[in-house]
Image 1 (cartoon, one colour):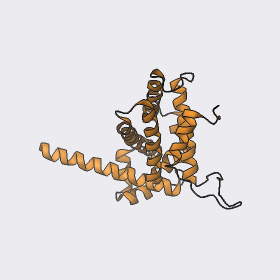
Image 2 (tube, one colour):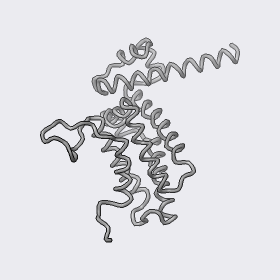
Image 3 (cartoon, one colour):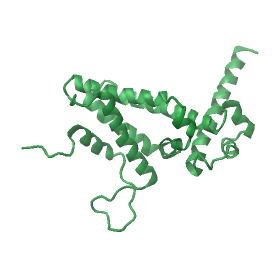
Image 4 (cartoon, one colour):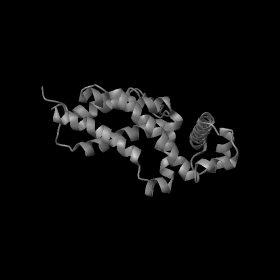
Length: 217
């Protein structure tokens, strides 16, 4: 076997794995993790049922692998968005970019915010290194802001990072489920519509950086 044929085989294997992950994302988002069937994922990906098990041990492994792949893209996109900016601008760019990704990739957002929580293996056994990288990035932005006097240093940066992510995660969940709270101008009794999650980035930044307290004039 030549080096060229080996490379072609590796590329084909990588492409097939990506097709399976993309199909799993669609099926999980459409039916939910528990109801999703490996056979349906295989059909969506255009592969035989047994092919799934050449790449993934089981459905939990497939879900975790999907999370890892998507979080790598998220982290790389966020890192590029904040590069070269001062801390406050980094915080705004990170929050805006994260919520833009939620808006642009609703199927992935549904899997990351809802379906992952259905896997006992993910919740109890998985070390979640990609998410830890995300928190370190966010915490690093806060820490730099504190060091440069742009952000209040009374809250430890790692705790602040988790608090900010909690707000982002809840907004993403509400948006994915279409369960936005009533806002000004909403007709009483009307079913709430999805809010503008991209615009919500400005609200999160305002809440994090200035709070809700009215400043004395």
